[in-house]
Image 1 (cartoon, rainbow, N blue to C red):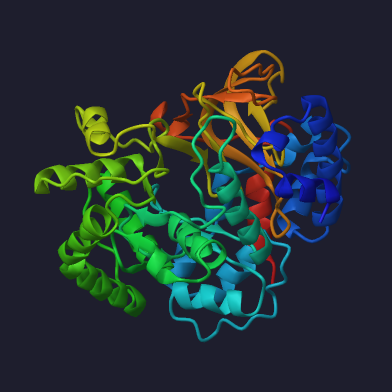
Image 2: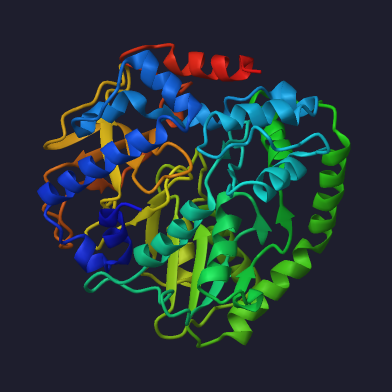
Length: 463
């Protein structure tokens, strides 16, 4: 690994955010050049896009913008291949977006998405993360074992104390982990995080991890859920044909529904009674924590968290269109007294950024942010206060290409000067998804409008 990146991984938050922004930019450029030279020959999709837009070298940070892939890239496969069980074609598609060689992996015996991903992970270094399919189609993000290890390290670093900000205590593994989440394991981003924390923070001890749901949400479940939500969004009933694998999913879902009430009661008993007065960490997306607070109120329960307990969440803004009930802030604060720490991140990144004491987000230097014009995708100035579509490059990515054009509209103060003491650019708290602002979220490529579509078409026609 690049020695500069190694420094970023091992430094404390105070050291990381005390680096002069000019020095950080030079580090980013050197690392970016290395990533491009290393990964272009190994990731077919990246090579196709680079040829198409005419980028052969990285001489300044902005040179990578035409190579940043739309966040929809990892769901650009044909849904028909899943319906027809053509896992060989899915493998061919995913092989184009990873540095891992998947071409010789036998998937002929696979009868489900879960068995397909099991086969890929058994014969490669992939650790695939599957999105929740809120738009009707799941993404398969080809993260590798190396990125997974880096990811959990950054979770711990992000939640560590910076100056007078609360410290989650994950570095020592002291607090008990409580997640207001409806599943315990699976390939979606959050249960992936739970599994990694159990391995790296809690020494593999499953008893330290408490989740509201005890089941497993595999890729087939997420696929089915996405299709149902897509039909509902169109005002229709889901009428698709269930494969034998999806029939098994439906049976498992029913089993989990049957035990949901008992699981919730156990979770609340452990939080409110068994660990009363002890140091705990309570996590959940904003909506999940609100639901948990409602459950406590309905049952007349009041958690008494011990000294050093830590609550963190996400979703106050950019919440994928979720609408929170009236009075939710008062409800949440009455059950889980503030402060609540908030984190902004995305599946495409191996890291996240925490809302600082001055209510700004600060990305670590291993992530290079850009703002793009939402209509042309041309980069906007990296000075002053600017609003646009966020693009990022994750320098930690080794198994996939780290450049992503997100679906988020953000405002960045490039000049920094944050009262919290962190140096460098800062992101305004008001993060909004473009799908909430307009009917669609089409991303264009400023240099070659059809570059991404042609890359997908080329990969799918390869034999």
